[in-house]
Image (cartoon, rainbow over all chains, first blue to last red; front, side):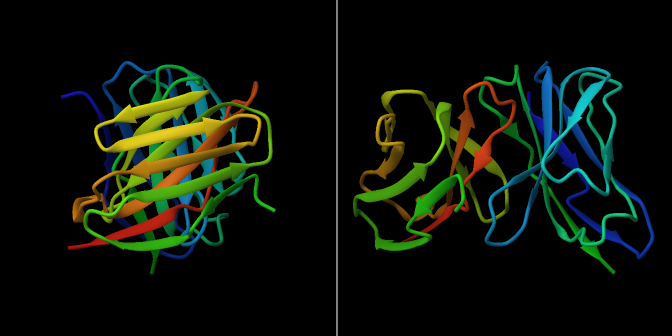
Length: 112
Length: 109
């Protein structure tokens, strides 16, 4: 089945630790996105990538990093510089930036 | 003021009622999206609109470009329609979507 997968479903981070959230898609989509969702707020864009080996910062990129070495994969690293990482993280992909985005099931990140 | 405002924030209705959720935006757009987020967190895209009206099953989405307003309607609502409904817009030439805060819909049996 085609779709987007995210792992893990829940992730716990200790103080000062970097953690990486996985996002994989087998839809052959060029564009991929990472969003953060906090209670009572709309989704906010962290990073996006329109093509392999290229990515751009979104509205809240500070404290995060990404890579796009393969078309199918767009991992997000939450670094120790992100002081308030507790949130629900959603990955999405689309054929190109103009088209409908398809979302993964999300990863909930909690700080210990 | 947010670029995308949804109303109401919360809506509770009885099964069978006709539901309307509103979205107003303040920028020129190339497309508007309606999304559905279930309690588990997963998001499904319902509609992408640039003009007029679209229908899928019991769901209808309309957009008025001049008034910068869109509505999502649900006919014959059912408890399984309970979810958060999110409006998002893409302004002309922009490479990102701007999201509303969402409307939490609860349909009671």
